[in-house]
Image 1 (cartoon, protein in one colour):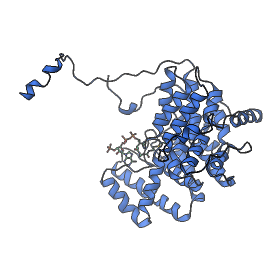
Image 2 (image 1 turned 60 degrees about the horizontal axis):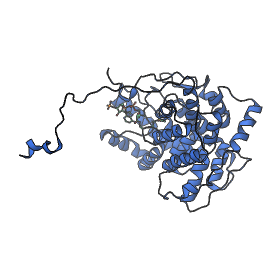
Image 3 (image 1 turned 180 degrees about the vertical axis):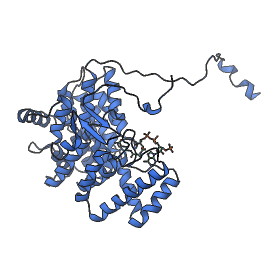
Image 4 (image 1 turned 45 degrees about the horizontal axis):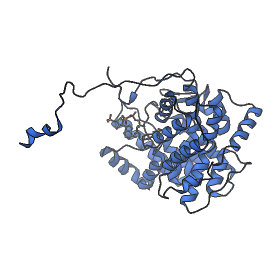
Length: 376
Ligand code: ACO
């Protein structure tokens, strides 16, 4: 048995939730190309699609909205998050907040859609509560007359957000809600497959999302664009990064061998939502990076991934930079929970094997005798 490094090319589950067609640059949720949904469906409608397999009827959407409204507040009112240092990484705060909420709500047993709703509805509240507390401000309760995206922005700032910000964030949440067997989704499915519980699965998934090779990249994209600064610095900056073997954040993908379709949609959004100067810098950086990556590594087919323009869009709706990965989580919890529910239908423990490359046949040497040969 030969190890497939990074499980590259290994199919680990059958799913009807979503699929990435990497060669064509397509992402499908339950039969809908992502372009069919982005900007048209709300995040709540997409949650229904991922959890139930169909877009909701008006009555189903009303029922889902009612259920989410009832689940937005934190069981302890945010008391647990007050214990965290203000310097806590927001992803650690999200992970802790979800763990607390799952325990306080008594989430256990076979995962259910109600449990998925109970967790997904609280993600924005946890992030916003932590952000307020670390800023020395009191948390703001969600409002019943606002949807999921609007409530997130409202709970962060205390101001009812403008419609263009709500639409921008809602579209972002739709775009990032699921993405085939990505690392965090796989993590959630592995945990669920042990017949643990949905809270544990989602806490584990947050940990997997945190890394810069997955959901931690967009803040680093902003850092990169800030470091580049001006159009005439694009070429020297990128050349230097690649000459010193650094990875360019927001480029490359395990499955896409062309531009990520979500990046195309986010680019269009960023074009309208950012300042012309910022967009020109981002687009100039993208164009030169792709040209250089493909000149230097033609076999890898490295293109823009979702994180590159996520940064610009999240910036344009006023989100602080270090909340970008947690905001990715606010979206992706829909997909994680859908996969946990799917995993439990005909569940079988996910337990792969490893290729053993260590020694064999060693004989035990008592402690007093170990290392004697080298000492004497
Ligand atoms: N910049 C420079 N070179 C790159 C990049 C990049 N962004 N991405 C891949 N490469 C190169 C690697 O250096 C490697 O080259 P080599 O074979 O000469 O050593 C080759 O392409 C293959 O790279 P891997 O890291 O092995 O590819 P893998 O499929 O494992 O990784 C990943 C995919 C993690 C997304 C990678 O492209 C990367 O690190 N990108 C930058 C971080 C990033 O944008 N993360 C967000 C991902 S999107 C998401 O999760 C939502």
